Length: 175
Length: 175
Image 1 (spheres, chains in turn brown, yellow):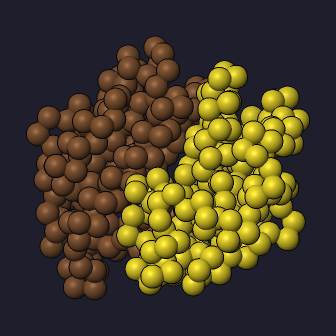
Image 2 (cartoon, one colour):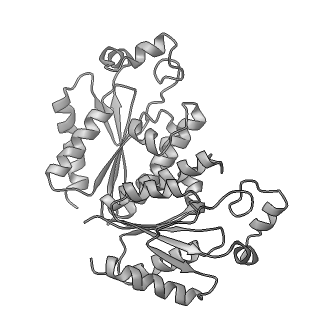
Image 3 (cartoon, chains in turn brown, orange):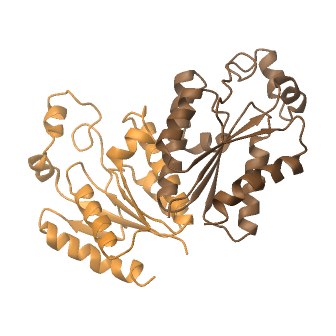
């Protein structure tokens, strides 16, 4: 049985990694161990080292994560992806390629993301120390037809996660 | 239960892909479907596009294939790798990192490999049309302590494969 790919997209600091990690850990606690967390920042250390943040490199990054997800899914391993994945076309390509693709748009206004900025990345981008920073000097194309929208500026982490689980449970837990 | 990584190393046209593919198909026929074939040439199209053939890029290529193998093994998926992997240190790093690592040195004198050269790659390398070609103008460091040596210049494909299966069967099929 093929695995699912749950793909979290959104601005930096919107809550993608938080929700993806909560989901991963929850599944483990439920005894669902056939699941792999593919966090964009972590993947860049292994799979896509050397790629930058131009549109071309970002698209290549997404393509590799997508290929890895498909490879895992083929063997019944669920993939949980947390990656900005700012370009609509690159995401839609993955939707076409991945059989069980579930896109979660982690929606949060840029201003709120910037206030959360725990690693000080927005600040560095504003100061010009980081270039091609999504939300500052690089675009984010919002999904038009995501499978789920979670507005993390209005929902607490707990309520965001509850909404996610409710939507996913019919898809994953029944299997 | 963790999967195995069977890592075929050797010169271009030594027989790595042939043996790896035979093994993959044999396992499938035996009902062992939790196995993924990672052929160096194929992987370069997805995982490592953009990498060249300098030592640094070759090492990065091996590191990525190794990381992918570990990720698959973690979920009980066997990885069958067919990659020139010319540098000893890069291979030894994978041996340290991959829990169930089984290295097959597909041994064949360069002259014989060149005679087999179905894609005409050695010819192009001799003509200077391909640079950094292992066996021509790039080194191949033979394994000092592989788990298995298969001399494909003296053994037929059938006998090579039989030797491989005999050695592996105790490790994989018993599981």
